[in-house]
Image 1 (cartoon, rainbow, N blue to C red):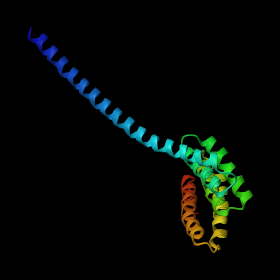
Image 2 (image 1 turned 135 degrees about the vertical axis):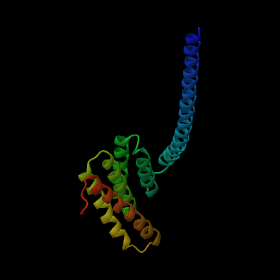
Image 3 (image 1 turned 180 degrees about the vertical axis):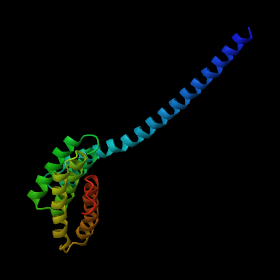
Image 4 (image 1 turned 45 degrees about the horizontal axis):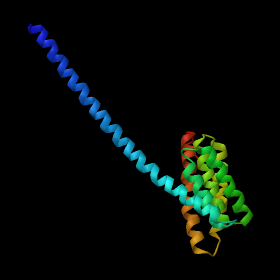
Length: 171
C-alpha cells in the first residue's frame, strides 16, 4: 500500500507540474497574440489611410509618397505586392520628375529586393537612390535637402548590410 501511495503522490506532483507548464505556455501564447494584434492593428490603419489618399489623389507627388509608403508597409508580409506598388510609385515619380519621391521609392524597392536575397539588384536600386540624393542635395529647397541627407544615411546603412550579408568586410 505504501508503494501504491508513493506512486500516486508522484503522479499528482507530475500532473501539477504539467498543469503549471500549460498555464505558463497559455499565458505566454496570450501575451504573444496580444502584442501581435497590437502591432497588426496600426499597420491596418496605416494601409487604410494610405488607400484613402490613393482614392482621392490624381497623378501627384502625394500619390507617389502614399504608394511608396504603402510599399514600405507591405515589404515584410507581402514583398511581391510591395514591389508592384513600389514600381508604380517609381514610374509616377519619374513622370512627375519628383526626384525625392523617386529616391525614397528606389530605396524602398532596394530594401524589398534585399529581403528576397537578391543583393546585386538591391545594390543597383540603392545606388540609383544615392545618385538621386546627390542630385537633390544641390536643390535650393531646404526640406528636400534635409530629407535627402536622412535618406542618404539609410541607403548607406543598407549598402553596409548587403556587404555584411555577403561577408565582404573590405567594402
